[in-house]
Amino acid sequence: MRSQAIVFVGMDGAGKSTLSRALESDLRKEGREVRHVWVLENEQSLLRRMLRRCAPAALTRAPGQQAVSGIPHTRPGCVLSLFRRLYPAIVMLDYLVYGFVRIRLPFLWGRHRVWIFDRYFFDILLSLSEEFSLGPAQSARMWSLLGSVFPAPDIIFFIDVEPEVTVSRKPDAYPTMDTATIMRQRYLGLLETLHHRFGTRVLRIDNNRGIKESYVGIRAGIQARSG
Image 1 (cartoon, rainbow, N blue to C red):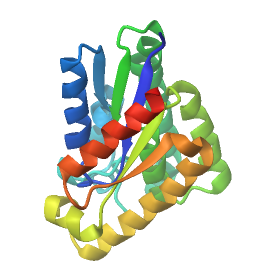
Image 2 (cartoon, one colour):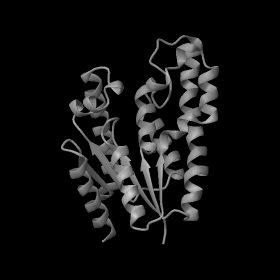
Image 3 (cartoon, rainbow, N blue to C red):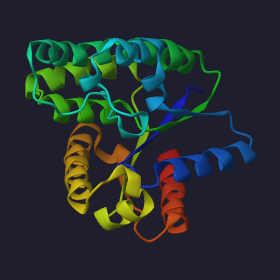
């Protein structure tokens, strides 16, 4: 039996971690071999920490304020401009190595039969595309590269909530309501892309009402896919 990849996608405060951890716990109780992966753990890789340490102060944020890229929006000078051109490629290389060594190879070996991903390479590309204004062709190339390393998901749960809910759950992540609204629109755009690429493997979960109701939808979605 091959390994199964279950992916949770959504903006900060949507409830991905809570729902994915609940699923992990229940599957373990059922005797399943499960591995839970928070993909953004790679933000603390040696390469990324070295870059943040060596880069000019204007290129880094406090840990609690870092986006996936780790670079704030600044008016670029020559050094900043060069660094911003190179940084997406560096992030890509780092995630390609991480994806191949930490995910792809163990996934193929089949030690864990169910893999639950809190975030995925989709989130990385969304952040890079927005922050560095990547064109469609460049974004497509990055998607192709990361998609060749990260396992194709068997099911994607897109956890969706209104901006007001995310702000109440994670006020530190959204300085204003407008920030949360813009981020939700970006993720809804990602949802369209996921539907186009993965079709019925993508399930939107409305998590505005609460975790219990949403979790019922998640288990129903998994059951439908298993049947």
